Image 1 (tube, rainbow, N blue to C red):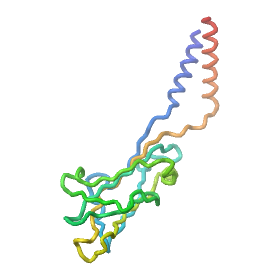
Image 2: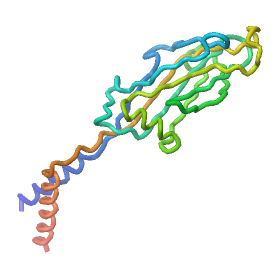
Image 3: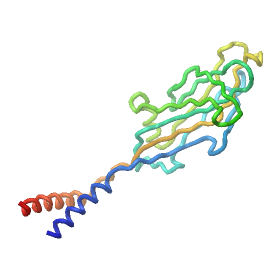
Image 4: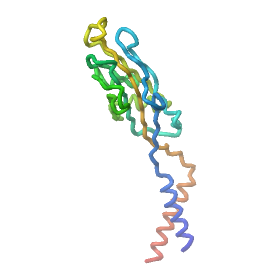
Amino acid sequence: MKLLRLVSLATVVLVFTGTASAIKWVDRDPNSGNGPLAFLYEGGYETYARTFNITYDGYDPSMHWIDKIIVKFAFADGGNDYYEYVDISVGGVKLWDDQEFDGNHNNAPQSYDWYGMELDPTTHQSIYDDLMADGVVDYEVVIQDLHGNSGDSYYREDGYLKITKLKAYGHKKQVPDSGSTLAIMGLGLIGLFLARRKLR
């Protein structure tokens, strides 16, 4: 009877230890502080393009699976002029088109204009595929010319990209079983069955 209980207990332990637990990976640019990363301005430095890389935070494409991705971008305006506009793309997919931003440098980073999005695994499947493949995905922020007066500093589109951030949540992939785990689980089930028969 004791042997049957031990086998049953081993089965329960195996089931619980095999359960996937959530893991989080983060890539933030800059790593700390409140930026800025770039001063974007029409007719000059209009595009900021970099990559998110979560392998630095422990992601291993051979061991992990990604369930959720969240991206965030923070901005501050360059001065007391019109609102500025940007396009923001991740993995070649435009997530924000002509996004208006203002924000300021005081009380950073709370005073920044933050734009964030949880990416849908179906709608944004290509981004999930890119990130899961090697832990790296491109992003791009482009200042937009909507006023058409780039020669006039009052009308010119310009502003600061302050912070970019990607958070990914996932779990460890199930390792292919050699057969021993299934055998022990089978013995455990048999033990439970025999124990119930004996009690009857």
